[in-house]
Length: 246
Ligand SMILES: Nc1ncnc2c1ncn2[C@@H]1O[C@H](COP(=O)(O)OP(=O)(O)OP(=O)(O)O)[C@@H](O)[C@H]1O
Ligand SMILES: [Mg+2]
Image 1: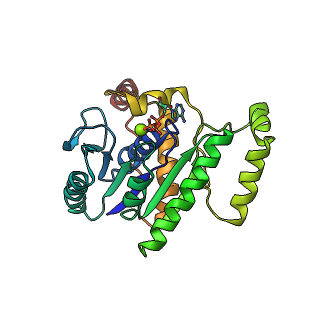
Image 2 (image 1 turned 30 degrees about the vertical axis):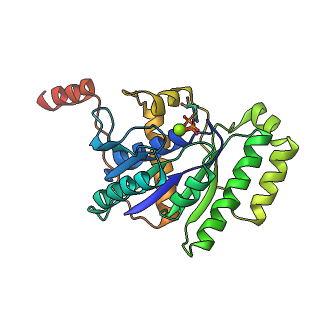
């Protein structure tokens, strides 16, 4: 089992969305047994397959440190029964201490960040906070900041890249490797992914999440099973069936 934490103090940075996008890519494109554990919803939810998703979802109650660790422990043990599984921890905002505690369980920690000045400052400070926690605990994980909702091309990208704090951040991350190589684009269709009980995914989301899963797997040395074949749309298979019959 490998454990990946989507953490960081900044509210709304995309922790939950990143966690779901990764889970979706691992489970749908590669059939990996994936469990996403929510840690900030104030309810205790046993490991359960979601009827509308390809991965499992569970939650710890976010009550107190002792209850939470006991619940997290149980979910760890349950997930680890499948050695080829991935557990994804969806963190909560403004919980630096909880983040430090979770990080010690992780093989990889991802800190999503927007391009605002404060977002970048907070993410960098989270990065060092978590790196220090790992060092203190003598554990090793790949800690990285992942750009979320950054423009990929065009004038908007130029505008963002010209901001002094963005330039400074990118320069720094060339000296200290802290940046996840890919960024997650701003996709309105992703709004659903984290917040809806019945998220609609699109072929674009499938493609972006599969690519995301590949890069993460490569970084943590997790061998992905072969990519699943895309199931053709029913009307297309009918068409092919008719062709074959003719
Ligand atoms: N790349 C994206 N494209 C479009 N919408 C996004 C993207 N990333 C996040 N969002 C949306 O932004 C909002 C905040 O994201 P999310 O809930 O994942 O943040 P969070 O870090 O988990 O927040 P919190 O700290 O409150 O837990 C959500 O409505 C989410 O759907
Ligand atoms: Mg969240």
